[in-house]
Length: 246
Image (tube, rainbow, N blue to C red):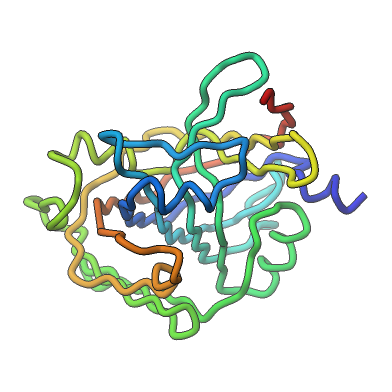
């Protein structure tokens, strides 16, 4: 019964006040060992794979169809790898594989771990904005991020593998699908996200310190892009299970 509950048994909706995403490029060989065998990294120029760190301020998160006043407001942080999956019908899907999730409230940790496999923990994260300067901080998670969301002349980070913002936007997230893989079988849980008017805007990164990326297994990373979206509705469909064909 508990296993069934964790498989996204119902659709969920929320309003995104903001979603700030910083994407880091790593050599493909660094990220491949982090993925289950059903998934492969989404590769750029045959050498780069990517981890996205998303900090999302959600409002009225609730089961889809419930009135907004029954929802809850949370800050959610996700550490996700851009991946591809070939489903049982041979169709190639592009999406994300979640390594870790964080939130600012114990309630979201409990519910998130009850209804998903996203490995939620609670942390002391705060998101503050003064004009176009947005700050994200967490002592426990080693987060200290500042971006300028009002810089019309924002340039790609130094050392980014992308040549322009058009290339970079392909790795801005979120992607249509999120995948969870069963370690004891060939089952792959697919969660589809639905959004409208999703136009990520480039931001200038003034400072970025991300404790998660100091893990010994994550060597050779570099900041590749940073985008923000604001004020959009979003929902996730009920999870669907696919059987991976080896």
